Length: 359
Figure 1: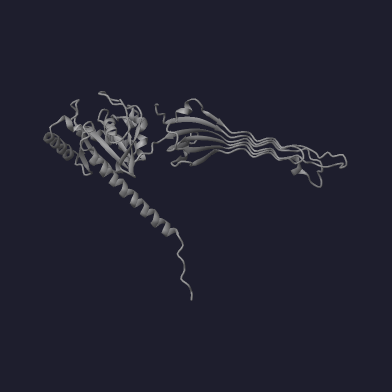
Figure 2: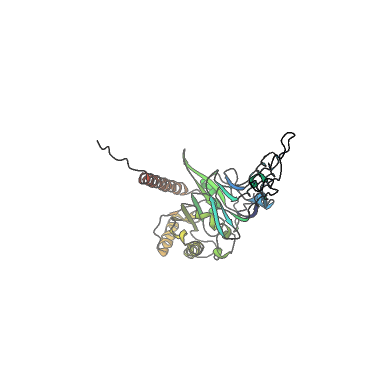
């Protein structure tokens, strides 16, 4: 199924029910007085993250979501029933924006996370509220308030630990096939990956991570060129980027120029991406003798003045891929450990310190 990672929808909360003008009418109670009840509150619209969903494709067919209107008030001081809420379920990792104000309403990063995006209108007051010593039989009631309406933009960002990036045909899909159970399309022409693929890499029982294969980028991607432009946002959530480049590009181009071109697109799209850990994978080493592959790799690394880890691999031959995945898992484990320690320190700093006994 093709991934649809953007959608625009309209949400309409329910109107509040109208207040009632009513009077108590019983056989032996003359002049019973006003007893009109209030209208019910209109239903609200919520957006909820659901881990069982992975695309926004359903919003191609349904673009409007409306909550139920509150019932009108009734005589005998009976209140109208409140309208039922409308819950719109989206994949985990969905960003919700208000189209009219361009503000971010919320980011749903966990299963069950909820956002109130349109509040239902309050119910109107019945005439029993307007009785006074002067006005004994008010014929006044108020209408229910209108529910809120908004046009929302939904953006899905994949939740992956590691993102693969590189030029088209760099071998990203082949690599993700080699290290996970994912089966993205592989062919000998560029742009075979038309949407992101997720794979789970299991290095051993109870130790695994999620890797995302992002469609190939080209120069100008940050400005909308090529297929990768729509998916650059997906790598913003990753903890590590694996930058794949052909060790000796078959089209005669220079691997150094390709790496620098991708770096330029990352910086243009989001300068913070350049601060994210990024390792260089010199792929398709099986096409060269081992000594030539190592010589090519050293030349590329020296020309780039590359300081981060780098590896010579072959996704097709599964050569060197296991070692890379083990180091990736070690980095993620260490990052998780540091995050846990930082969270514990923050909790300890926020907790009140017990005062010593005076005695």
